[in-house]
Image (tube, rainbow, N blue to C red; front, top):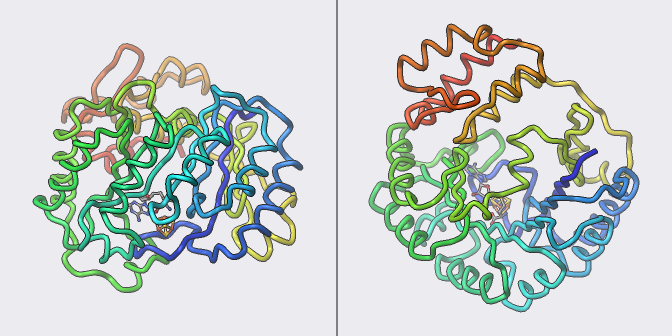
Amino acid sequence: MPKSVYIHIPFCLKKCAYCSFLSGLNPCNASVYTKELVKEINFFYKGEKLNTIYFGGGTPSLLEIKDIERILACFNFDKKTEITLEVNPKTVDLKKLKQLRSLGINRISLGVQSFDDNLLKIINRTHSSKEALKTIENIALAGFDNYSIDLIYGLPEQNLENWKKTLKIAKDINPPHISLYGLKIEQGCGFYLNPPKNLPDDDMQADMYEMALNEFKNYCHYEFSNFAYKQKYISKHNMTYWNIKPYWGFGLGASGFVRNKRYQNETDFEKYLKNSTEKKHYESSNLLEEHIFLGFRKTKGIRTDKINRLFNIDFDKKYKQQLEKYKKSGCIQKTLHGYKLTKKGIMLSNYVLCDFLDDTI
Ligand SMILES: C[S@@+](CC[C@H](N)C(=O)[O-])C[C@H]1O[C@@H](n2cnc3c(N)ncnc32)[C@H](O)[C@@H]1O
Ligand code: SF4
């Protein structure tokens, strides 16, 4: 049974222009929502001892302490359990961070996005770079040894010069963990409806990514978008996803992976509130495809011995053509137990991985 739990909190102070997550709902409904969420958890979760708990969103830091406490009380965990909460700088002060720490939360994931105030305005963030810096200071003061900051590259009006400044500030802070996301404009977000001017093109995005790789050379780059200052700061929860391990997903629109099947919860807020304990609709997915797609995201790559055992295949034989093609072009490299993408392969991962996926259908 799953040893990891994802909890979705869909509320935000306001919607950022790039965000198409199930988020941005008015936090005035947070307590009613928590009540239903707790019902759902108590109905499905059977008391398994947990390795990781992840509060994602939306903005989980908008929840009142008593609501987070009520949710945590549903679970069996101890001090070794990695408990992450996503935080928006505008929603916490030192007092609240200390309260979160005393509830047992031991990892913060902070949405910074950029240290450039002009860009923060363009993307409709609620905070300034100064407020983000103050929050980082408070996170450490509140006793969090483990925290992560999110940065986005490829924003409108972003160029190599202002990106470098953001990277420099991040490097000086030396956070235990950094997530770097390339901007994706998906259906439903503000930028999709009102396309912004001066968006960096794909080449510029690649240059920005490369600049970040150089800047964070002293970090362990363990996944396309993720960097840990030391091994112990690698996100255990996110590794669950990339290693295709089971996890519960609770809350509005949350996804889960249980007994080798995936499900997604109701995405309509009113309907979820009426029936949070509704039977989950499990669906089979192409697990071989997922092992390849998600496994190659890790810089260590995939273990073909494991894949061969799980799917009763000979990976090298099945993908002979692709392996030869991408080894020759310098996108894929052999490792002790399998294969990994090279830096060039990571940059071209969309093309490379699609070539593998076509064969598994
Ligand atoms: C669910 S948000 C949680 C953080 C918190 N809500 C906040 O914004 O402060 C997780 C992260 O996803 C990233 N993100 C969201 N939408 C994105 C997009 N369209 N392109 C790239 N990154 C995105 C942002 O870096 C964000 O901090
Ligand atoms: S990035 Fe975070 S704060 Fe902004 S809309 Fe998305 S979930 Fe909400």
